[in-house]
Image (tube, rainbow, N blue to C red; front, side, top):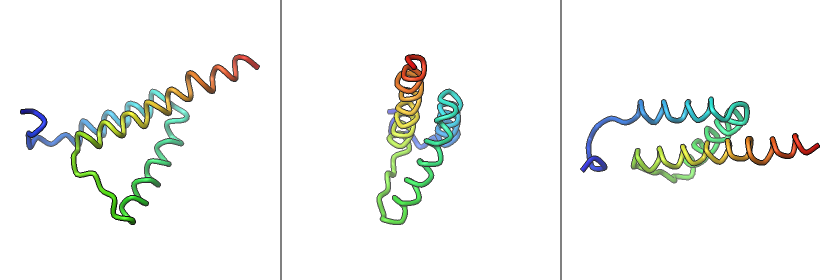
Amino acid sequence: SLLDSTRDVSELISLMSYGMMVICFPTGIVFFIALIFIGTVSDIIGVRIDSKYIMAIIIWLYFLSGGYIQWFVLSKRIINK
């Protein structure tokens, strides 16, 4: 199956991550910095996810939540003021 393939998906993960960061700009930058911090801390304490597919989904959902907060929570509060 495709989930068990040995294909390199790192370029796809990078493209998806940068794409989501651009879509949810400017909060995407804040979320990206926080993601780097979370990754550093998880490496220090030894928490590691080996599956590239699971990691891609987690990163995508992380940036999706940032975009949701920006466009549907913060912008609504700004408009209502």
